[in-house]
Image 1 (cartoon, chains in turn red, yellow):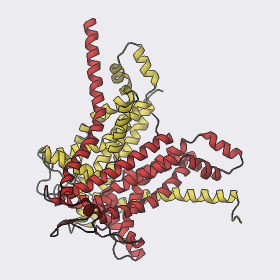
Image 2 (cartoon, chains in turn brown, cyan):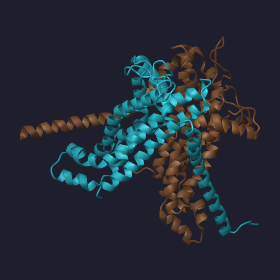
Image 3 (cartoon, helix red, strand yellow):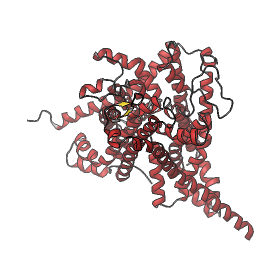
Image 4 (cartoon, chains in turn green, purple):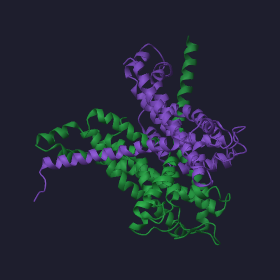
Length: 300
Length: 279
């Protein structure tokens, strides 16, 4: 009996250790990703001054001499992401408020899964639809020179990011205590006044978190932007820039990694872009996580 | 001067919200309608099951890839979820693991591709292969599996655990015989959703697994590159000239059907299995 008890205890200890290791692996994977990106990006920082990399106006990896200016790519990503947020945040917030405060329960049950489906469609399919259908049609309607442009990417990214924004914003809105609503209504405010002056402000951390996660999602999206934004590595100019071809950081990696020679400057430069993407998404996601927790959107 | 009184403002605002909801639902309906309408005509048994210029190799490749991905990611993800929900006490380690999971979920898919290229393809010498692609994708779906499994474990009533422990069962016996069986529906649902996610991803396998070939359609081992649906669609849409429009649309439709079908399966399974539970 005593021996058996000890065997069980040993087994328990073994299992618990294995399971704990699985949890810790999540941390190790993040560190590994960072380490491998850094290791493969570092050589380019030795070859080209950081200022020329980040501030350089020309991305010409294959010309002689090669130029690795990432400014056009950074701005390209910024344009596409900004455009996506301008569409997805107001729309997503409206849907979240609608679903939690206005919609009849029955309708909500239909609305939510339908919006969720937007996130299930593969990004290559969005790209396909944009490239073959939406782009040419929009170019025709808006009288644009080409059917591949920044705002087209923004529009499709907005659809992809919408479910996440709706879901997190709705969680935040639901986490606002019912008493706050009742107090406001009891003071004679209309339901709309209650929503806009009490509920939404109280849920603002969660709403900001949703937008931040939207940034992370949009800036990291690859296949769709690769297929629909035209991939011209030029610095976008003003508002017109939204309706001209741009090239994002992600699309550059996807388009060029297959052709760059192993351990060439080009190869390292593409890893440097990957490192930047990793850092940007790490910061936005960590910030969003802090805000979501503060909003009480996560039940632990 | 105020244009509208509060009641009128409310009417207007709610109308705008209804409109926004309609606007958010419209695209998915339009996408499904267009896909079925344009893709349906090109979809035929011969396109689906033909090896040469057909979709069979890509469908098989996709199945192999997601199967292997699930095989790698599921044990790890479920174990991590068990740790977070059943074993861990709140503290810095748990906080750090959760932060890592959130960030794993946020790493851009193309960055996973870079990581897979550097670690699996190059350093571990897997080459551009089924194995390297599955390893890369399993990291990508790991956070999804962890969070869905955790949610499933959360649904299991505390009383069941306490009853088991009170009967003298050990922690692990309780987890394995009481908690896990009851959480299984939710865990499987999460797994299917992860598989669906992996089936649609393109960027992570771009330099780790995918290739386009008519002469070597099926991999002979896990060290061979593979044809997969999303990559095939990408290549057809952007690189290969003279692909008939009907074939492209049909390919896109098949991919969407696979992904949405898996999603639907997950939803049905969840409702069915939940109905079987007695609390």
